[in-house]
Length: 55
Image (cartoon, rainbow, N blue to C red; front, side, top):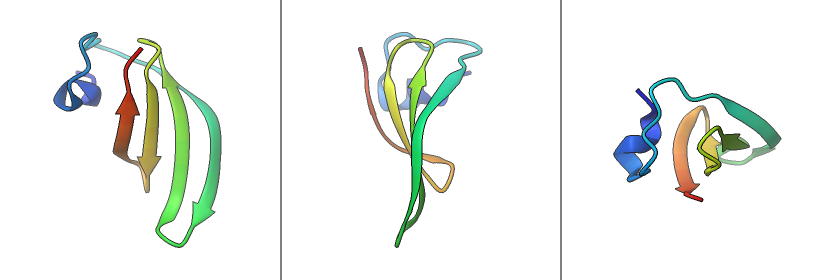
């Protein structure tokens, strides 16, 4: 199940895929910006969901 469901994503896709938009290192660790198949923008910090914006 998509981890974004716990963040309130209304799509709650069973097998989402995420496309990496960009990534960079920060003092807090590796940060990645991804686009989900539901079109949400997802921010990962050290591989964990840190934020998302639904579409």
